[in-house]
Amino acid sequence: MSTALGQRSALTISGLQTKFHTPQGELTAVDGIDLTVPRGSIVGLVGESGCGKSVTALSVLGLVPAGGQVTAGELCFQGRDLRQLSEKERRKLRGDRLAMIFQDPMTSLNPVYPVGRQVAEVLRLHRGMDRKSAKAKTIDLFRQVGIPDPAARYDAYPRELSGGLRQRVMIAMAMACEPELLLADEPTTALDVTIQAQILSLMGDLRREHGTAILLITHNLGVVAQLCDLVYVMYAGQIVEAAETFALFREAKHPYTQGLRKAIPALEGGQETLYTIRGTVPDLRCPPPGCRFCPRCDRATEACAQSVPPLRDVGGGHFVRCFQVT
Image (cartoon, rainbow, N blue to C red; front, side, top):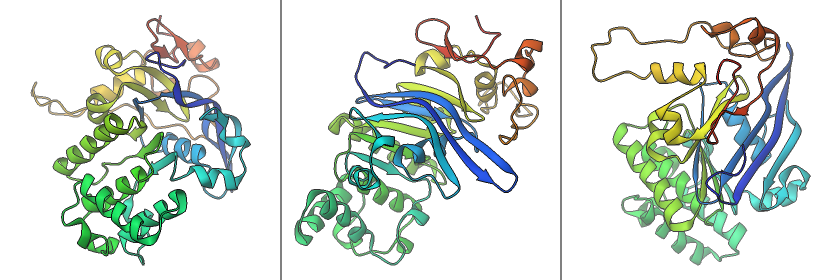
């Protein structure tokens, strides 16, 4: 999918492939995806658990877990392919121009250090601030993200904070150096709806005030509709649909995306049984030879079972990986 919205890209992923070696065989978690995050935009990466969303973000950062390896593709950030950088060069980027909000702040924050010191460390490392200046900046960041009594919270440990406050600390850490690109992996998971709304508002402010581009990884289509300019739908390691958010919600074209939308509970209509997509996700150690959604699709034909459909533009920059969509 080419650079959208007529803007230069903050991140361009081309042909990314990430594999894991397991005792049961090789597993391709991310299989040749293309994805663009225009500067100053918020892009949603949507799909069910296990489809490869988080692995995509970790591949960009160079933090793929043990046993995994990026085996193909380009990760273009600030005009450079991240795969060609040394680990030292990548460390300079992480937390500075390229930042991430990890999925679980309780396990991402160090439990034996006060949260303020952890944020201040980012400023001292990447901005060369002294201890006093870094502390003052951290307290100001805490204030910006809505942490009450920020000076006192500076010395609090992660266990002493609620889930919402820990997530705000993670956002403060990610925005400390005003990054060009922020990867947000399920930033509202396990938070109540009020805190979710506040976190999403903070991310919108970050984009407006600092021009930060955001790749928002989520399974929540409501969050995507509220916040994102573009959306990519991922299934079994592949992008199956990509479009501007309004176009996708106006007319989802891929059967999987249509199934995701049907599965959203309706407030009206007297629906007694929630819709579910039949079947199960394929084993990525031995995926089906054709379309990966074919075994679960009501519209599948023999061609779908035999050949992998390409991701193609079906009009207006709306990309779909399906033989049945014209």
